[in-house]
Length: 281
Image (spheres, rainbow, N blue to C red):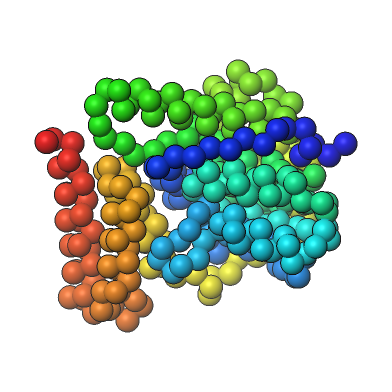
């Protein structure tokens, strides 16, 4: 029996959603790709959720379209992602879990946070010998009174329980042990992933390549700025507006002049100051 047919679908809605773990983002190498991409593969090579920097990102809408085009044929999903939007991740997990064809997930580098439980939807999971899963509790940015904080904490606990259950069904590990691992943010290497039931086998070494030509430093920098602003308490809509402003800043590309680069940096820093000031008023 397929392991992905054992867990009932869980659906959530919320105004604010968690993002990429800063540590996961620092340990993610966006140049890691698969060497054998073809029409029956789907690549999850970016943070999970819509990317306002270049209007892309790994979304449920994109994954749904890719699966429809495959029309039930077997599919390989290549993952190298630091995670991201937990609700977008749950939607992608459900899409893969319900897909009619055989789903093989290959963890090429990092499958962190939301990317880690997306991988659990597969019939078969392969991981690079030097690959990693990372599991942790959901997090979000919030300000408000004590009732707002308690309500959000209770809601996050529901999300954590759901994610732990996904890991439990796939691995067979105890819920209590998984919750303890999520509390402390556990990194699981290739050997431990296989031994603990998070993966079934190692990937052949020649499947993983480093492609340094097809990603930009600006995009990575934009994601790092977004993480810092979220931790400072800036809302998702405000962060989106800032990134759109940065995109429109003359020189905010590889051809940036020193003065334009300084303007971009000052814009980010001032927005962080404004966000931080909300905590003292």
